[in-house]
Structure formats: structure tokens, C-alpha cells
Length: 240
Image 1 (cartoon, one colour):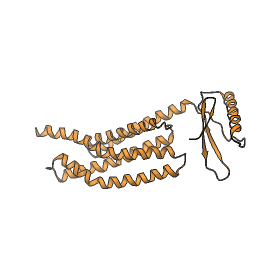
Image 2: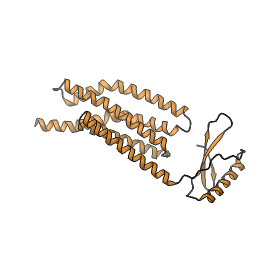
Image 3: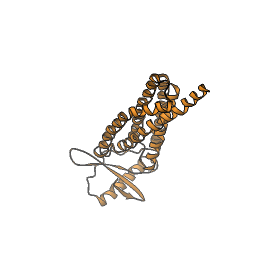
Image 4: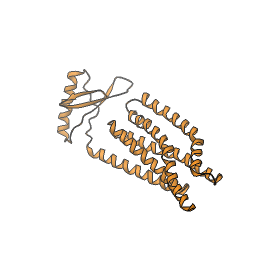
């Protein structure tokens, strides 16, 4: 992202598409200040910019966003994710069984940890668009897991004598084409947003693109093995 250095810090300059002329959003990391200090800093930034770039002195808006806003957003994001996971667990436990719900929820937790690690590694700013991408991935991943788990349940009803490992493998193979098709079409949309959506949607599209890949992986390689681990032990105890 383009930037100018100002007293040891970096100004992040983001272009905003407009019909006439050009507008820019300038972000500057600074401690909390009162109105007078903010106005003084604003004047120094404009002076520094004018020395490098000729532009019209017209600031449409000056805002000082403190760390409280960021802390509130992170806390609300954590609450939203936890409520979503709990709601999904309760619904799946009612709709399927607790073992299936546990496998699906663990795959969701896996996706959240991986994607949050990616956000931290890439130094992506955690804002409302990243939060929206995380919530979107929760819905996408659980939808993929439900398709696989539902097929496993149907096959168990049809073939009760079939070995459970074989039944799970057959169920995954039967839904694999649908899973791949859904993932590829979703990736096409996410990549299109990443390339054509502009800076505003860049973080959302980047997180979504990365998350879809791991969401597909976890639906097949985490949700089903967890179900096998829990239900397999239960079946072994019954047979003993």
C-alpha cells in the first residue's frame, strides 16, 4: 500500500474512486490526542504532503479513532463468533446427534484459528470487513460439513451392517463432487472480488479466499474423522 513517511511514522494513503477528481483517505498511527493537538498534527501532515505532492487543500473530514473502538470491535467479534458456534452446536445436536455436532464445531474452530493466524501473519487490519469475512466463513464451512454429515447419516440408515470406516469413505466420495464444485465457484467469486473489488473489499476478499480453501479441507478431513473417533469408540464399547 502506498505511503509517505512523517516523523518516523508512515502515512497510509488510500485512493477513493469518485466520478470527478480524486479523493484520498490518509491514516496515521498516533496516540490519543485532544482537539488542539489533532488540529496541529493535521496541519503538519498537510504541510508535509504539499512539499511532495501538489494537491488542493480541502480536507472533507478529520477523525481521531482511538483504541477503544478497536477493542470494542474485537470483543464484539469474539462474542459474535462464540454465539454462532454455540448456536450451530445446538442446532446440529438437535438435527443430527451430538457426535456429528462436535465434529462440525471442531472443524469451525479449526477454520477460525487458521484464518485468524493468516490475518495476523499478513498483518491485515482487523476491521468490520474482516469480521464479516469470518462470519461468512462460519456459515460456509458448516454448510459444507452438514452435507457430508447428512450423507453419512443417510448411509447408516441404509447400510447398518457396513463397516463405519467404509461408510464414511463412501459418503465423502459421494459428496466430493458437490463439495469441489461449490468450493471452486465460491473461489471464483472471491478471487473476482479480490482483483476487481478495490481496496475497500480487499481484506474481505483475501480472508474469504484463504478461508474457503481451509473450510473445504476441514469439512472432509476434520469433521468426519472426529465423528469416526467418537462414534467408533461408542460402537466398539457396544460390541464388547
